[in-house]
Image (cartoon, rainbow, N blue to C red; front, side, top):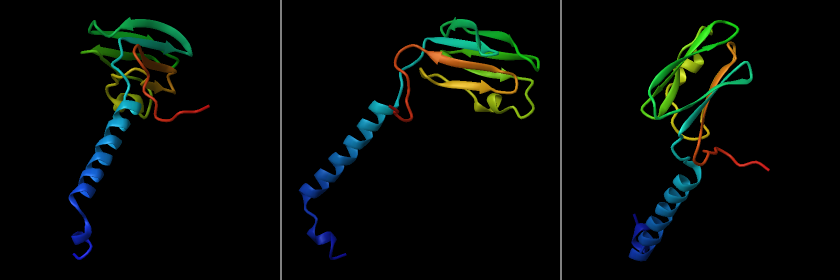
Amino acid sequence: MSALRHIKHGDYLTLSGGVAFTLWISLAVWSGSVADTALIRSGGKVFKEVPLSRDQEIEVPGPLGTSIVTIEKLRARISSDPSPRQYCVRQGWIQQAGEITICLPNEVSVELTGGTKKYDSLNY
């Protein structure tokens, strides 16, 4: 308790300013913008490029069967897939530019493009 006696009002102001700056810079650097297009690939090749502005379901063929990509409310997801573990289905909705969902066994992926990409790390 004696250590708290030495903290002045200016110290609290500096501390809160530092926390606010850290939150702001984190959101500014690591949050991507809203995407406007979904790039759907099958077997490593572009199958279809669709706008996110129109709600739709797209059947995408793969080696194991058909995957269903759902576009709804400016976001996308793989809602059905014949892969055994269903990881891509459980991933859920993606909505920011640069996000991607991949079904490896069926070789189907959905990547959102447009705006600025979201980065989780920077490489050079």
